[in-house]
Length: 403
Image (cartoon, rainbow, N blue to C red; front, side, top):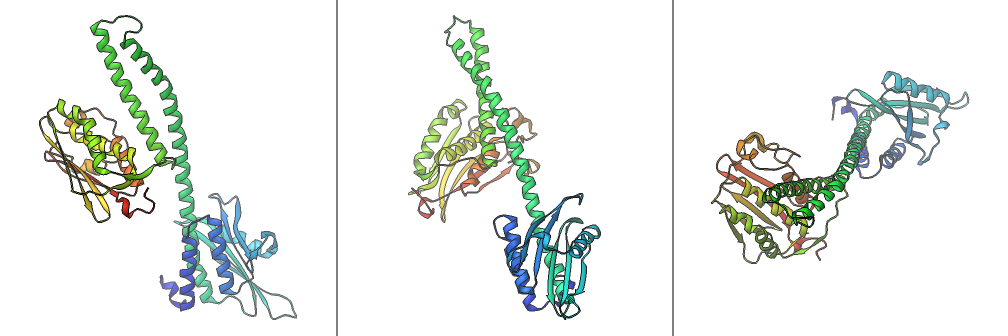
């Protein structure tokens, strides 16, 4: 609490906590603001209240939430003097008060207060309250409203930030989808015709022509993998990725993945050592996604290690999870590069790394695939001593809906 809040009594502190909870709740900002205003009107025994938002130029504003004794209120019901108070508050960015006796025959006073909502010196809107009592607003209660305004301003600022981030994600997602689609169509055609020519379906080829076509096929494959990976990352980031979560025999999956990579490891005389803890439990995960992560980590270990070296794949149970680890004795990763390792398109500056073909997307995708399934991915590495990547998966027996 700030020094200004020293005079707020215990009841107001409890009210502040209640309003903070309502504003932090999930759901639409309007619904949260209405709940908070309803509570404030009841707590302060006020006639009406509203939350008004404005744009950055203060040229346009709209009512986010308007309540009148816990019933929806029409903003136009505010009298002209109240509207003038609101405009002055927006122009001055200061709390303003207005008190007026209801009539000569009444002891009641109409009290109105407009409280600016500001975040980082930027006016977002205001709170407006009106009460009809024999006394105007107490000074301590006005101080309380000043504290409350910070809670509202924070909620509004966070909501706007989330909306801006989502717009950015949506724009990037649409752009990526368009680009990958436009690339996939001609690439499929190139790949198809290249395969037909390489199979000599349109006539015999010389050895040199076969060599050139082999280069084209490899590059088509690389571009296809790039497009596939970009598309998958885009689906994850935009929330459109769907996972088929099932009970998986982990030992069986590890054997399957290592068998598929056996030939490429043998070509470099690299030795893949698989160590699985006895009675390793089933996990609850998407089989294809886990296979993709395993394949990438193992290929990475192979690419960034010398020939005739050992790569170790282990699996063990840790509490309610299984940890899978891929370790090598390869080139290692510098401290500077480690900070950016999971960044899209990042590739280390090391000459040994640059000699290996890659797009800098595999680790970024692997991190997303693991975390989307409730796991964590981690690593440790030292230059010229190798790297160790590990990730966790939930054990099926502890999952909420294992199948």
